[in-house]
Length: 294
Image 1 (cartoon, rainbow, N blue to C red):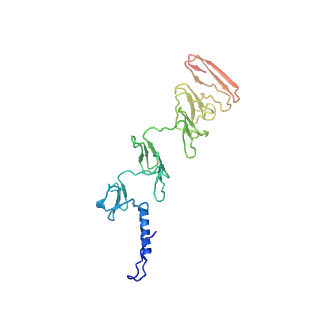
Image 2: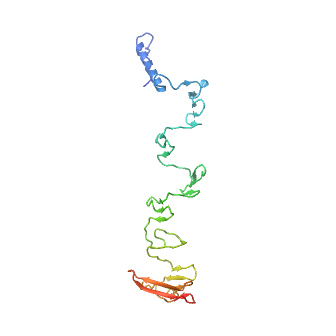
Image 3: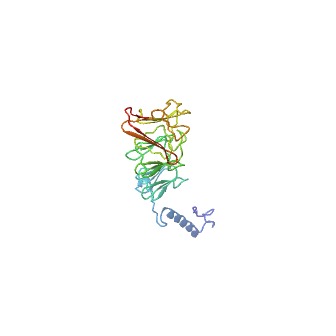
């Protein structure tokens, strides 16, 4: 309601002013609005006092530059900045926000904080806990550095926007890749790396293809090896005579030279199956003094 003013007339006793009843009604209306705004309608609950008489929990005004709530100076406002030297408490599930997003931050009764939108930190800023303040560092390029281990739940996944479960890690530590991309070269497939080491067995569900000038399968990296030589016709490469694959007949093995270098066993056998599972050839060699089976 706008303030109501009593009509006084143009000059004294000219009869143009408000009557006593109308004037009294305006006075009552004005006071009713004040008591409702600053109290319960009949009693004021927020007393206003001068600074020299201020006590705790009263509204105190100091000139035109500083307004102080609570004479203990826990809350001050200088016209543009609100300063709090004590705690700020919001109700359970209460919001903290701005004019454009009044619920930007919500705090639950359990203390859980929910952000309505993004969280931004400075370039090279850190996120941490009391015991490890720099647990996570985010560079200006977006690179994230962790000061210690990264743990995910049992059977948890790591992925990308297009393949959210690209990597799965079981409770036993078994790593599974979701990709089923076939390898057609040394730089394609579900897993591409420069080199790989296997401490124990390795099993392959399909073919193994060796690329490069010469593909080699070695044992212990020494003399015991099988060489599958590239270069056109059989025996034309650097290791001529050591080929075991006949480019013209996949069921044949050419025993042109030493194929198995064998030590430590009395005999060795080699069985070759065709695509239907039938035995094509079976070879058994007996250990010789030269430690070779030809």
